[in-house]
Length: 112
Image 1 (cartoon, rainbow, N blue to C red):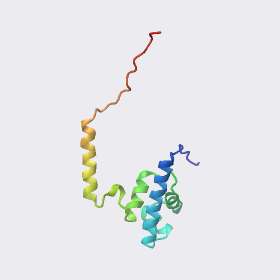
Image 2 (image 1 turned 90 degrees about the vertical axis):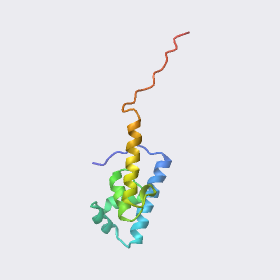
Image 3 (image 1 turned 180 degrees about the horizontal axis):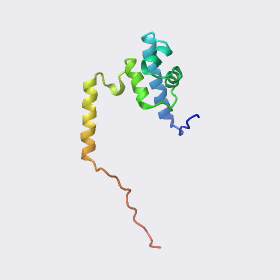
Image 4 (image 1 turned 60 degrees about the vertical axis):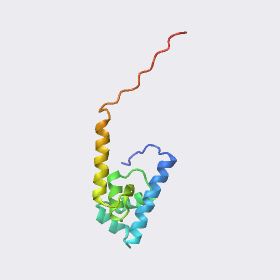
């Protein structure tokens, strides 16, 4: 059964396509076939083609793994230590924010 994907905005569609181009460029620079990248990423060749075409249905983790395998640095991060620092900074920021978010209260204007 085919997954249904919500409509994506043009900006998201462009970002998916650019990400696919990065994966394809890295794969070609390494002279890997689609099947070779699929084997390394533990996915099907169809999934590799979908990522390279910018299809929105692939898991984020799979896309990040393909970027890593092809030598493309997501988020402009070159090494694992820097990625760990970014993760810790994110955790610290989240710890400062409220753990629950409540909808803003709307003042009822019943003055006719």
